[in-house]
Structure formats: C-alpha cells, structure tokens
Image (cartoon, rainbow, N blue to C red; front, side):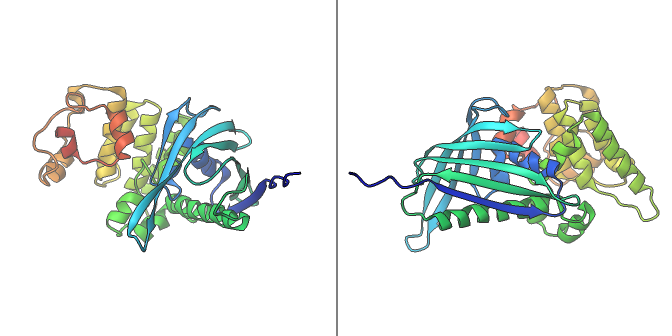
Length: 325
C-alpha cells in the first residue's frame, strides 16, 4: 500500500480594528482587484470577469529580494473570486495559478463587528501542504499580512479622528501626499462617503461646513478632496465642481494636487467639455501656472486623455504637465 496522502493544512488568523467600523473595513476587502493598496504587494489587477461577481480573477505580485545575491524574484498568483456576500461581509477565493508552490489554496475573509464601533477581520484558509513551507510558517505569513492591512487601514482612517491624523502626519512631505491621497490610502473613505449617493455626500459636506463655523473651527482640504472624488464616483460633476470651488470660497483653504486630480478625474469620467469649467481659475493661475505646472491655459474638456486608463496605470498619481505631454 502507498503512503497515505498528507492531510490538508487549515489555519485561521484574525485582527481587531477597535475604532474602524465593519462597513469601512469591508470596502477594503470587497475591492478585490485593488488589494495591493492595503497589502505588501507590488501590484494587483483584474485579469477577467466582472468586478464584484464570482468568477472575477485577479493577478497579484510582489518582488522578493535576495540579500546575498542582491537580486529580486517576482512571486505571483492568479486568484479567482468564488463567492462574495456584501450583507454578511465575507468573500472566498482560490489560488488558480502561482509560482509560490501552492497546489491548492482556498481562503475566506470575513469582517465582523465587535463591541463598540470596531470590527475584526478573520482570514481562514485550507490548502495542500506546500513544499518549503510549514503550517505554522504559513499562519505567521497570513497574520503578518493582516497586521500590515490593519496598519494601512488605520493610517487611512486613523483610530481617532481625521483631524488628529492630519496633525500627526500633515508635515511629512512626500509621505503625507501618499497618506492623504483619495485615490489610494483614503479611497475606502471616499467609497463610504458616496455609498448612498448624494445623500451621504451632502451630509458629510454640511458637517464640514458646520465645523468650519464652530468656535474652534476645523478645516480640512483632505476631507473635501474625498467628497470631490465621491461626487465623481456617482457621476455628479456639478457637485464635484461646487465642492472644489468651496475649498477657497467657503473654507478659505487652497486646493492641493489631490483636489485638482479629483476634479480632473470627474471631468474625464464624464468626458465633459465646457468653457464654463476653464482651468483659468484665479487660484490655479497664481499657484500652479506660476509654479510651472502649466505651460498654457486650456479647458478641462479639450485636452483630456483616456482618464480611466491613465488612472488605473498611474494609481491617480500624475502632474498636470503629463496632461499636456
């Protein structure tokens, strides 16, 4: 008789996010083809299938460096979404192909509310034994991935308030630009703001207006940028433009690069062309043309690239010089 086949490996890891509610955390996991924003991956993108539907396949990769040979090796997997439940906040996927030694691997991720306003993320997996790995080693790997995800989510939402987050990281230079980007780190906040369309977007905006008029006012271009991109997500160009204008007129703040990127994305998504929305804006003329970002003036519509492709390739990071090139 031959030797009995090795039993399946099974593991279960979890992490608590005490001050992040379950709905916010779920927006991270359900965005199946953008998990690289929250995990230690170089890239993740859609290969085939329909977003949010079983059968969707993603490609994930990361580069592992050999400290001795000083060379990098790309580790990759293609993963298929088997099931997703937005009510129960859980999804299941399997590894289809890979160069990491997995013969079979199926994982289920769940977001569960906990006492208070927090949640926990559970990651269960079952797989065949993997050559070069041990079950405890694989559990450590999954646990490490969850801890990294927790850190990224908390950086995006802060475990206290966005205000404290801005105070803590607002002067961090290039790091701050990335941390406060509504296309990447703050994208789940954008999704939460626009989940119920204009209703939630208006509620958030009016709350910011009230805070702006308070005895100790709170002003945040970061929060307003999330509203601009949220308006773009629901195809509401007018609200996006009005919010952009209010940064200077109502809140007495200056738009930053993310403000302009968000508005450009809104115009590009609708392929809008109108002289009403000229970039000959007094703030832009002073700060951006003088700073060398623009070599000429133009309307949003007459020089648009294919923004969906541009943003998916660049992750939302581009300067306005790139628009003119």
